[in-house]
Length: 269
Image (tube, rainbow, N blue to C red; front, side, top):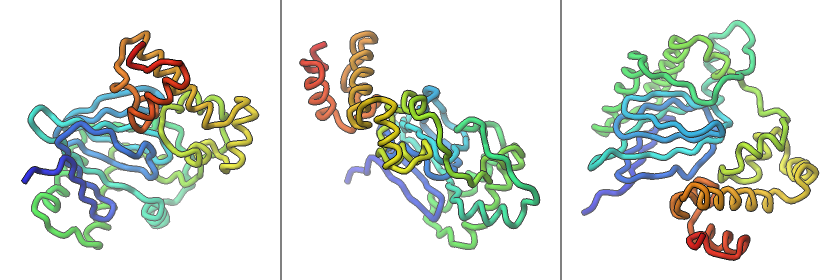
């Protein structure tokens, strides 16, 4: 019997991933703060600021409410393995209520924070692995202890991370044009763009049409196709290599939309 290409095991708020093939994560939105450790293989992260590649042993913290593309890459003739722990707002509020004595300023730093080189955080992740490798239960009490340990270690690593972990504010209303110009290649629902720009869906659509004189759906389609054409013509990219990067879900839909917009198949440029 062949092994499944992708294995993911979730115990509470701890996720263990194992993949035998290169894979783009289906979700491009980080809903809650998440701390991760790459055991084997590498990960390419893409934000509005650009792409970065992280290899075995890399550790980091991704803040909530950010758009992030993740590609998991196994090593040659091997498998990609990683472990992540997610901090829900309820978990962090409970910790903050017990321990904090002063108000926390809203976080304004980068969305991805490196934890590389911290032996205590590395040891923490390695202490979780036996529960997945030996199929031992990680019960509720132990899970709560490990989650609190992770928070303590993050604050020990960098005390300023309290402004990230304990910033419970919701996205505020921001410049719509600037945000969309930087994030249009992320394949998320309009409702997600609305939330991240501090608007209701109705207000987002209304403000969008005032700003761009067209609907969000038409604008996104045109922006993505125009960028795809540039990548193919100017950088020699193959359609099969870039359709996901510019925000399409599958190659056939991309090819159909491209031909409809520009009169020829992307493969014929």
